[in-house]
Image 1 (tube, rainbow over the protein chains, first blue to last red):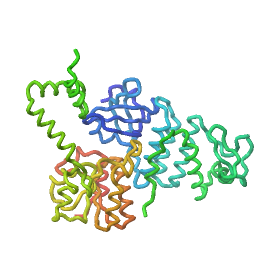
Image 2: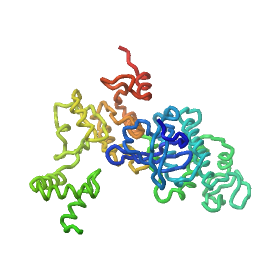
Image 3: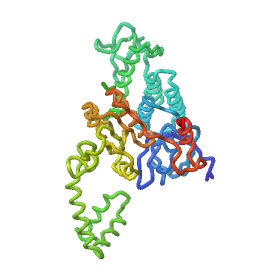
Image 4: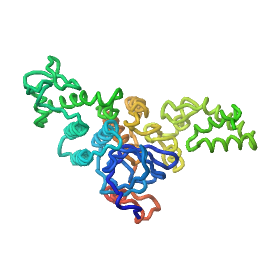
Length: 225
Length: 198
Protein backbone atom coordinates (compact mmCIF):
# COMPACT_ATOMS: atom_id res chain seq x y z
CA UNK A 1 0.00 0.00 0.00
CA UNK A 2 1.21 3.47 -0.83
CA UNK A 3 1.41 5.81 2.11
CA UNK A 4 0.85 8.86 -0.01
CA UNK A 5 0.14 8.24 -3.70
CA UNK A 6 0.34 11.98 -4.50
CA UNK A 7 4.01 12.01 -3.71
CA UNK A 8 4.90 9.38 -6.29
CA UNK A 9 7.48 10.44 -8.79
CA UNK A 10 9.45 8.91 -11.63
CA UNK A 11 13.04 8.04 -10.79
CA UNK A 12 16.07 6.36 -12.32
CA UNK A 13 18.91 4.88 -10.29
CA UNK A 14 22.16 6.46 -11.51
CA UNK A 15 24.37 4.80 -8.95
CA UNK A 16 24.07 2.56 -5.91
CA UNK A 17 26.40 1.63 -3.13
CA UNK A 18 25.94 -0.53 -0.05
CA UNK A 19 25.09 1.06 3.27
CA UNK A 20 25.38 -0.87 6.52
CA UNK A 21 24.41 -4.54 6.28
CA UNK A 22 21.53 -4.56 3.84
CA UNK A 23 20.89 -0.89 3.04
CA UNK A 24 21.65 1.12 -0.06
CA UNK A 25 22.69 4.68 -0.72
CA UNK A 26 21.35 5.64 -4.12
CA UNK A 27 22.00 8.45 -6.50
CA UNK A 28 18.63 9.06 -8.18
CA UNK A 29 17.54 11.16 -11.13
CA UNK A 30 13.93 12.08 -10.33
CA UNK A 31 11.15 14.19 -11.80
CA UNK A 32 10.50 16.26 -8.63
CA UNK A 33 13.96 16.56 -7.07
CA UNK A 34 16.26 16.31 -10.08
CA UNK A 35 19.42 14.50 -9.07
CA UNK A 36 19.28 13.54 -5.41
CA UNK A 37 20.80 11.15 -2.93
CA UNK A 38 18.49 8.69 -1.21
CA UNK A 39 18.98 6.02 1.38
CA UNK A 40 16.93 2.87 1.72
CA UNK A 41 17.29 0.48 4.63
CA UNK A 42 17.12 -3.11 3.51
CA UNK A 43 17.41 -1.85 -0.09
CA UNK A 44 19.86 -4.52 -1.22
CA UNK A 45 17.13 -7.13 -1.06
CA UNK A 46 15.09 -5.00 -3.48
CA UNK A 47 15.83 -6.40 -6.92
CA UNK A 48 14.22 -3.37 -8.57
CA UNK A 49 16.71 -0.81 -7.35
CA UNK A 50 19.01 -1.16 -10.34
CA UNK A 51 20.19 1.28 -12.98
CA UNK A 52 18.11 1.39 -16.20
CA UNK A 53 14.91 0.38 -14.37
CA UNK A 54 12.27 3.14 -14.43
CA UNK A 55 10.82 3.43 -10.93
CA UNK A 56 7.97 5.13 -9.13
CA UNK A 57 9.29 6.22 -5.77
CA UNK A 58 8.16 8.05 -2.70
CA UNK A 59 10.87 10.16 -1.10
CA UNK A 60 10.75 11.74 2.35
CA UNK A 61 12.96 14.00 4.40
CA UNK A 62 14.99 16.98 3.30
CA UNK A 63 18.59 17.88 2.70
CA UNK A 64 21.04 16.11 0.44
CA UNK A 65 20.12 12.58 1.46
CA UNK A 66 16.42 11.76 1.31
CA UNK A 67 14.75 8.58 2.52
CA UNK A 68 13.32 6.24 -0.07
CA UNK A 69 10.04 5.16 1.50
CA UNK A 70 8.67 2.91 -1.20
CA UNK A 71 9.29 2.03 -4.78
CA UNK A 72 7.87 -0.01 -7.58
CA UNK A 73 8.57 -0.51 -11.27
CA UNK A 74 7.11 2.17 -13.56
CA UNK A 75 7.68 -0.04 -16.61
CA UNK A 76 9.98 -2.95 -17.49
CA UNK A 77 13.73 -2.27 -17.34
CA UNK A 78 15.52 -1.04 -20.46
CA UNK A 79 17.16 -4.21 -21.78
CA UNK A 80 20.75 -3.10 -22.30
CA UNK A 81 23.22 -5.76 -23.33
CA UNK A 82 26.93 -5.95 -24.06
CA UNK A 83 28.40 -2.65 -25.31
CA UNK A 84 25.06 -0.94 -24.68
CA UNK A 85 25.68 -1.36 -20.97
CA UNK A 86 28.89 0.66 -21.25
CA UNK A 87 26.93 3.47 -22.91
CA UNK A 88 24.31 3.39 -20.15
CA UNK A 89 26.99 3.47 -17.47
CA UNK A 90 28.64 6.36 -19.30
CA UNK A 91 25.38 8.36 -19.33
CA UNK A 92 24.94 7.69 -15.61
CA UNK A 93 28.46 8.79 -14.78
CA UNK A 94 28.01 11.91 -16.91
CA UNK A 95 24.81 12.84 -15.05
CA UNK A 96 26.28 12.16 -11.60
CA UNK A 97 29.24 14.36 -12.42
CA UNK A 98 27.46 17.17 -14.24
CA UNK A 99 24.05 17.68 -12.61
CA UNK A 100 23.59 19.81 -9.53
CA UNK A 101 21.56 18.28 -6.72
CA UNK A 102 17.88 19.27 -6.47
CA UNK A 103 17.89 20.98 -9.85
CA UNK A 104 14.76 19.82 -11.69
CA UNK A 105 15.57 18.85 -15.24
CA UNK A 106 12.34 17.62 -16.85
CA UNK A 107 13.61 17.80 -20.44
CA UNK A 108 16.80 16.03 -19.53
CA UNK A 109 14.90 13.33 -17.66
CA UNK A 110 12.82 12.64 -20.76
CA UNK A 111 15.90 12.77 -22.98
CA UNK A 112 17.68 10.31 -20.68
CA UNK A 113 14.84 7.80 -21.02
CA UNK A 114 14.80 8.29 -24.80
CA UNK A 115 18.56 7.89 -25.04
CA UNK A 116 18.48 4.60 -23.10
CA UNK A 117 15.68 3.31 -25.33
CA UNK A 118 17.56 4.39 -28.46
CA UNK A 119 20.69 2.61 -27.26
CA UNK A 120 18.80 -0.59 -26.51
CA UNK A 121 16.99 -0.58 -29.86
CA UNK A 122 20.24 -0.12 -31.74
CA UNK A 123 18.53 1.84 -34.55
CA UNK A 124 20.95 4.77 -34.33
CA UNK A 125 24.68 4.33 -33.74
CA UNK A 126 25.36 4.38 -30.00
CA UNK A 127 27.95 7.16 -30.18
CA UNK A 128 25.50 9.42 -32.03
CA UNK A 129 22.96 8.93 -29.22
CA UNK A 130 25.66 9.82 -26.69
CA UNK A 131 26.71 12.95 -28.64
CA UNK A 132 23.11 14.19 -28.88
CA UNK A 133 22.63 13.64 -25.17
CA UNK A 134 25.88 15.41 -24.29
CA UNK A 135 24.86 18.42 -26.37
CA UNK A 136 21.40 18.57 -24.79
CA UNK A 137 22.92 18.20 -21.32
CA UNK A 138 25.22 21.16 -21.95
CA UNK A 139 22.34 23.22 -23.37
CA UNK A 140 20.06 22.46 -20.40
CA UNK A 141 22.80 23.44 -17.96
CA UNK A 142 23.23 26.74 -19.78
CA UNK A 143 26.33 25.92 -21.83
CA UNK A 144 24.78 25.37 -25.25
CA UNK A 145 27.34 24.83 -28.00
CA UNK A 146 26.82 26.68 -31.29
CA UNK A 147 28.34 24.81 -34.24
CA UNK A 148 27.56 27.33 -36.98
CA UNK A 149 29.03 30.57 -35.61
CA UNK A 150 32.52 31.32 -34.34
CA UNK A 151 33.50 33.49 -31.35
CA UNK A 152 33.14 36.68 -33.42
CA UNK A 153 29.61 35.62 -34.48
CA UNK A 154 30.91 34.99 -38.01
CA UNK A 155 29.64 31.89 -39.84
CA UNK A 156 31.91 28.87 -39.53
CA UNK A 157 33.69 28.35 -42.86
CA UNK A 158 33.99 24.79 -44.00
CA UNK A 159 37.55 25.08 -45.36
CA UNK A 160 39.09 26.70 -42.27
CA UNK A 161 40.11 25.13 -38.96
CA UNK A 162 38.90 26.04 -35.48
CA UNK A 163 39.76 25.27 -31.89
CA UNK A 164 37.42 25.43 -28.88
CA UNK A 165 37.91 27.94 -26.11
CA UNK A 166 35.53 27.41 -23.22
CA UNK A 167 34.35 30.96 -22.48
CA UNK A 168 34.40 32.33 -26.03
CA UNK A 169 33.60 29.60 -28.48
CA UNK A 170 35.28 28.68 -31.74
CA UNK A 171 38.49 30.50 -32.62
CA UNK A 172 40.37 30.23 -35.90
CA UNK A 173 43.41 28.03 -35.47
CA UNK A 174 45.67 26.21 -37.90
CA UNK A 175 45.80 23.16 -35.63
CA UNK A 176 42.07 22.81 -34.93
CA UNK A 177 39.10 20.88 -36.29
CA UNK A 178 37.89 21.38 -39.83
CA UNK A 179 34.97 23.82 -40.18
CA UNK A 180 33.20 21.35 -42.48
CA UNK A 181 33.09 18.84 -39.60
CA UNK A 182 31.58 21.41 -37.22
CA UNK A 183 28.90 22.22 -39.76
CA UNK A 184 28.23 18.52 -40.30
CA UNK A 185 27.67 18.11 -36.54
CA UNK A 186 25.24 21.05 -36.60
CA UNK A 187 23.34 19.40 -39.46
CA UNK A 188 23.62 15.94 -37.88
CA UNK A 189 25.34 14.40 -40.87
CA UNK A 190 27.09 11.60 -39.10
CA UNK A 191 29.71 10.14 -41.39
CA UNK A 192 32.34 7.97 -39.65
CA UNK A 193 34.85 10.81 -39.82
CA UNK A 194 32.41 13.33 -38.35
CA UNK A 195 31.55 10.91 -35.55
CA UNK A 196 35.21 10.46 -34.61
CA UNK A 197 35.68 14.21 -34.75
CA UNK A 198 32.52 14.84 -32.67
CA UNK A 199 33.76 12.41 -29.99
CA UNK A 200 37.04 14.34 -29.63
CA UNK A 201 35.27 17.71 -29.71
CA UNK A 202 32.80 16.71 -26.99
CA UNK A 203 35.63 15.35 -24.87
CA UNK A 204 37.35 18.73 -25.10
CA UNK A 205 34.18 20.73 -24.43
CA UNK A 206 33.14 18.55 -21.46
CA UNK A 207 36.60 18.47 -19.86
CA UNK A 208 36.39 21.79 -17.94
CA UNK A 209 32.98 20.81 -16.53
CA UNK A 210 34.33 17.54 -15.16
CA UNK A 211 37.26 19.00 -13.25
CA UNK A 212 40.53 17.17 -12.87
CA UNK A 213 39.08 13.65 -12.85
CA UNK A 214 38.27 12.22 -16.27
CA UNK A 215 35.20 10.02 -16.77
CA UNK A 216 36.16 6.47 -15.85
CA UNK A 217 33.53 4.76 -18.02
CA UNK A 218 35.53 5.75 -21.07
CA UNK A 219 38.15 3.18 -20.09
CA UNK A 220 35.56 0.43 -20.69
CA UNK A 221 35.34 1.20 -24.39
CA UNK A 222 38.85 -0.01 -25.18
CA UNK A 223 39.21 -2.88 -27.61
CA UNK A 224 41.21 -6.01 -26.95
CA UNK A 225 43.74 -7.52 -29.29
CA UNK B 1 33.49 11.96 31.56
CA UNK B 2 36.67 11.46 29.64
CA UNK B 3 37.90 7.91 29.06
CA UNK B 4 41.47 7.01 29.84
CA UNK B 5 43.55 7.24 26.64
CA UNK B 6 44.01 3.50 26.14
CA UNK B 7 40.29 2.79 26.57
CA UNK B 8 39.41 5.58 24.15
CA UNK B 9 41.94 4.24 21.67
CA UNK B 10 40.32 0.81 21.78
CA UNK B 11 36.84 2.30 21.31
CA UNK B 12 38.03 4.27 18.30
CA UNK B 13 39.69 1.17 16.88
CA UNK B 14 36.46 -0.86 17.09
CA UNK B 15 34.57 1.71 15.04
CA UNK B 16 36.55 0.65 11.95
CA UNK B 17 34.31 -2.45 11.78
CA UNK B 18 31.28 -2.22 9.46
CA UNK B 19 28.04 -1.50 11.33
CA UNK B 20 29.85 -0.54 14.55
CA UNK B 21 29.31 3.01 15.78
CA UNK B 22 30.74 4.71 18.87
CA UNK B 23 28.09 3.25 21.16
CA UNK B 24 28.58 -0.38 20.11
CA UNK B 25 32.34 0.12 20.16
CA UNK B 26 32.11 1.33 23.75
CA UNK B 27 30.02 -1.69 24.70
CA UNK B 28 32.52 -4.09 23.12
CA UNK B 29 35.43 -2.36 24.83
CA UNK B 30 33.86 -2.52 28.28
CA UNK B 31 32.82 -6.12 27.76
CA UNK B 32 36.36 -7.17 26.95
CA UNK B 33 37.92 -5.15 29.75
CA UNK B 34 35.39 -6.12 32.41
CA UNK B 35 34.67 -9.76 31.68
CA UNK B 36 36.69 -11.30 28.95
CA UNK B 37 40.31 -10.21 29.08
CA UNK B 38 41.54 -13.54 27.76
CA UNK B 39 39.26 -13.32 24.75
CA UNK B 40 40.51 -9.80 24.13
CA UNK B 41 44.10 -11.00 24.06
CA UNK B 42 43.21 -13.80 21.69
CA UNK B 43 41.42 -11.34 19.44
CA UNK B 44 44.43 -9.03 19.45
CA UNK B 45 46.82 -11.84 18.58
CA UNK B 46 44.55 -13.26 15.89
CA UNK B 47 44.12 -9.81 14.34
CA UNK B 48 47.85 -9.11 14.33
CA UNK B 49 48.68 -12.53 12.92
CA UNK B 50 46.05 -12.28 10.18
CA UNK B 51 46.97 -8.74 9.16
CA UNK B 52 50.63 -9.69 8.92
CA UNK B 53 50.22 -13.18 7.49
CA UNK B 54 47.33 -13.03 5.01
CA UNK B 55 48.07 -11.82 1.53
CA UNK B 56 46.63 -12.46 -1.89
CA UNK B 57 47.14 -15.60 -3.96
CA UNK B 58 49.28 -14.74 -6.96
CA UNK B 59 47.10 -16.81 -9.25
CA UNK B 60 43.52 -16.22 -8.18
CA UNK B 61 43.75 -13.14 -5.90
CA UNK B 62 41.87 -14.93 -3.11
CA UNK B 63 43.17 -14.41 0.43
CA UNK B 64 46.11 -16.75 1.08
CA UNK B 65 48.89 -17.23 3.58
CA UNK B 66 51.29 -18.65 1.04
CA UNK B 67 52.08 -17.23 -2.39
CA UNK B 68 49.54 -19.59 -3.91
CA UNK B 69 46.28 -20.49 -2.17
CA UNK B 70 45.37 -24.14 -1.38
CA UNK B 71 42.83 -24.30 -4.21
CA UNK B 72 45.31 -23.13 -6.84
CA UNK B 73 48.07 -25.36 -5.40
CA UNK B 74 45.87 -28.49 -5.50
CA UNK B 75 47.19 -30.55 -8.44
CA UNK B 76 44.04 -32.70 -8.56
CA UNK B 77 42.02 -29.70 -9.73
CA UNK B 78 41.65 -28.77 -13.37
CA UNK B 79 43.78 -25.64 -13.81
CA UNK B 80 42.47 -24.98 -17.31
CA UNK B 81 38.94 -24.06 -16.15
CA UNK B 82 38.60 -20.75 -14.31
CA UNK B 83 35.50 -19.51 -12.52
CA UNK B 84 35.46 -15.71 -12.18
CA UNK B 85 33.76 -14.53 -8.97
CA UNK B 86 33.42 -11.16 -7.24
CA UNK B 87 34.44 -12.03 -3.68
CA UNK B 88 36.10 -14.69 -1.49
CA UNK B 89 32.66 -15.43 -0.04
CA UNK B 90 31.56 -16.60 -3.51
CA UNK B 91 34.49 -19.05 -3.66
CA UNK B 92 33.37 -20.47 -0.33
CA UNK B 93 29.79 -20.78 -1.59
CA UNK B 94 30.92 -22.73 -4.67
CA UNK B 95 33.20 -24.96 -2.60
CA UNK B 96 30.39 -25.75 -0.18
CA UNK B 97 27.99 -26.47 -3.04
CA UNK B 98 30.56 -28.95 -4.37
CA UNK B 99 30.78 -30.37 -7.87
CA UNK B 100 33.25 -27.84 -9.23
CA UNK B 101 36.77 -29.00 -9.89
CA UNK B 102 38.41 -26.03 -11.57
CA UNK B 103 40.22 -22.93 -10.36
CA UNK B 104 38.84 -19.52 -9.38
CA UNK B 105 39.68 -15.93 -10.11
CA UNK B 106 38.56 -13.49 -7.43
CA UNK B 107 37.90 -9.93 -8.59
CA UNK B 108 37.34 -8.45 -5.10
CA UNK B 109 34.58 -6.22 -6.47
CA UNK B 110 32.85 -5.28 -9.72
CA UNK B 111 33.63 -2.74 -12.40
CA UNK B 112 32.10 0.52 -11.23
CA UNK B 113 33.48 3.54 -13.06
CA UNK B 114 31.57 6.08 -10.92
CA UNK B 115 33.37 4.75 -7.84
CA UNK B 116 36.67 4.86 -9.69
CA UNK B 117 36.87 1.07 -9.94
CA UNK B 118 38.20 0.22 -13.37
CA UNK B 119 39.71 -2.94 -14.88
CA UNK B 120 43.04 -2.51 -13.03
CA UNK B 121 41.40 -2.26 -9.61
CA UNK B 122 39.75 -5.67 -9.99
CA UNK B 123 42.91 -7.38 -11.21
CA UNK B 124 41.97 -7.91 -14.84
CA UNK B 125 45.51 -7.35 -16.15
CA UNK B 126 46.49 -10.50 -14.19
CA UNK B 127 43.64 -12.46 -15.80
CA UNK B 128 44.69 -11.09 -19.17
CA UNK B 129 48.21 -12.45 -18.56
CA UNK B 130 46.83 -15.85 -17.65
CA UNK B 131 44.66 -15.90 -20.77
CA UNK B 132 47.67 -14.95 -22.88
CA UNK B 133 49.74 -17.82 -21.47
CA UNK B 134 47.25 -20.27 -23.06
CA UNK B 135 46.88 -22.23 -19.82
CA UNK B 136 43.13 -21.53 -19.69
CA UNK B 137 40.61 -23.27 -21.98
CA UNK B 138 37.33 -22.21 -20.36
CA UNK B 139 36.23 -19.22 -18.32
CA UNK B 140 33.01 -19.42 -16.29
CA UNK B 141 31.52 -16.01 -15.49
CA UNK B 142 29.90 -16.11 -12.06
CA UNK B 143 29.39 -12.42 -11.32
CA UNK B 144 26.10 -11.38 -9.75
CA UNK B 145 23.07 -10.52 -11.84
CA UNK B 146 23.21 -6.78 -11.14
CA UNK B 147 24.13 -4.09 -13.67
CA UNK B 148 27.68 -3.89 -12.30
CA UNK B 149 27.94 -7.67 -12.49
CA UNK B 150 26.72 -7.69 -16.09
CA UNK B 151 29.15 -4.94 -17.11
CA UNK B 152 32.02 -6.82 -15.49
CA UNK B 153 30.96 -10.07 -17.16
CA UNK B 154 30.77 -8.44 -20.57
CA UNK B 155 34.16 -6.80 -20.17
CA UNK B 156 35.77 -10.15 -19.30
CA UNK B 157 33.84 -11.81 -22.15
CA UNK B 158 35.45 -9.38 -24.61
CA UNK B 159 38.87 -10.10 -23.12
CA UNK B 160 38.38 -13.85 -23.52
CA UNK B 161 36.96 -13.63 -27.03
CA UNK B 162 40.00 -11.66 -28.16
CA UNK B 163 42.14 -14.60 -27.01
CA UNK B 164 39.77 -17.24 -28.40
CA UNK B 165 39.00 -18.73 -24.98
CA UNK B 166 35.64 -20.45 -24.44
CA UNK B 167 33.33 -18.53 -22.10
CA UNK B 168 30.18 -19.60 -20.26
CA UNK B 169 27.88 -17.81 -17.85
CA UNK B 170 26.02 -19.19 -14.85
CA UNK B 171 22.43 -20.12 -15.72
CA UNK B 172 19.81 -17.67 -14.50
CA UNK B 173 16.25 -18.56 -13.63
CA UNK B 174 13.94 -20.23 -11.16
CA UNK B 175 15.73 -21.09 -7.89
CA UNK B 176 15.79 -24.73 -6.85
CA UNK B 177 12.92 -25.37 -4.46
CA UNK B 178 11.28 -22.05 -5.38
CA UNK B 179 7.59 -21.66 -6.14
CA UNK B 180 6.86 -19.90 -9.41
CA UNK B 181 4.31 -17.61 -7.82
CA UNK B 182 6.98 -15.92 -5.72
CA UNK B 183 9.65 -15.57 -8.40
CA UNK B 184 10.16 -11.98 -9.62
CA UNK B 185 8.87 -11.04 -13.07
CA UNK B 186 12.31 -10.31 -14.50
CA UNK B 187 13.67 -13.66 -13.28
CA UNK B 188 10.70 -15.53 -14.73
CA UNK B 189 11.07 -13.76 -18.09
CA UNK B 190 14.76 -14.68 -18.15
CA UNK B 191 13.99 -18.28 -17.21
CA UNK B 192 11.42 -18.50 -20.00
CA UNK B 193 13.63 -16.97 -22.68
CA UNK B 194 16.53 -19.26 -21.76
CA UNK B 195 14.46 -22.42 -21.32
CA UNK B 196 16.14 -25.71 -22.10
CA UNK B 197 15.03 -28.69 -24.16
CA UNK B 198 14.80 -31.87 -22.14
